[in-house]
Image (cartoon, rainbow, N blue to C red; front, side, top):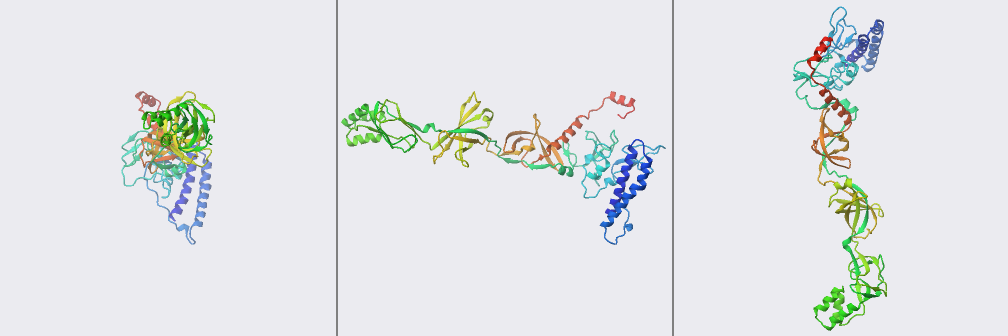
Length: 524
């Protein structure tokens, strides 16, 4: 029943307050409008409220028996002034009637708009009295957002300027516009640029926070690449003396060969002469060394010593496992010393050559993991590491070539294939990181907003590092576990900048300005 009666009184007070505002601030009061509102509008609103309350009350409840609420106590700061005769005329500052009587001050504890229900949203302390003075909103807005309740049993440490200026007072006082200074209690003085936002405003603006965490931050470098043979695994089959090709085995370009597999049979007069010397002088080391210098294989030399015969043609075999990259040997041809007969390549390990732009080169290091995807094998990835960074920048493309080594046990990777290369740059060590949305970059400095709890936010300058995968490394300014604002941070930052700007404007006036203001009749 007390809540029902309070609601009816609230509606009446709102109606009377609105009429009084028109009468007191409209320049020329309109008596007819005020009288009509008293006689028609206010009773109609109260009647509707009582009719609506009758639907809420249990059957048989006597509304007339409802006790009237006790008069409010004159506690809290003065929020406005009203006519001493009770007329609906209000003023934000002290004024007098035509007959010289002063307006009566109305404290926060006496006004219904400052005595909202317990479940209403409390208004921040730095906004108390600010809206009622006509700077930022009306009394109706203040009633909707909730009023600041006096701290019972606590003594204020000091009083601060209601406009946020760095001006404090040990005793209650008013500023030049008649607004009361706001009491500051122990534990409420944050100092610095801490911004306080009401819980309702935090919810309406969509403020979201996330804790800073230690994670690996890396921004992959993605570039195209080309597969190539490992230069250390390519072998050429050739003679070291003039020879004639007697017979070529059934091996062609692209065939896979094994180590020791016969490739070509050649006749060389110089090799045959050395072989005859070996047979004629068994155990003579010089003859054997001569055959070795002519690149005759050890198995062929052993066979000569065992059979004691000089073969007409010497067999040349594959020196390694691999594929035939080139075949130039043709039966009956003459091959000069050093001519390439076969070129064999081992593809068990392949290279990937990729050109890294100069702007991304600083993040690439030898040993970093690399992921390679082939256009000929969609859905499959190959893992390797950066083996070499070439010490030269291409002057035309402004890029540096890097080499990645990939194992190729099944022979899927072939020379000259195209590949998509992704290099995981950055350090593999976890670092303190926050989401990219949490960093406000002004171009000259980077700032994040720390959530101090209970609607308090503190801007903090930070030093950022690498970025990648939606996170930014924080090298200084934020520790792991600190909550940072990731959404609506620009709105809070704007309020913080406004507060800093107001503080910077708090410069003392000189004596000349004070004298000019006094001569003009103004308030210094």
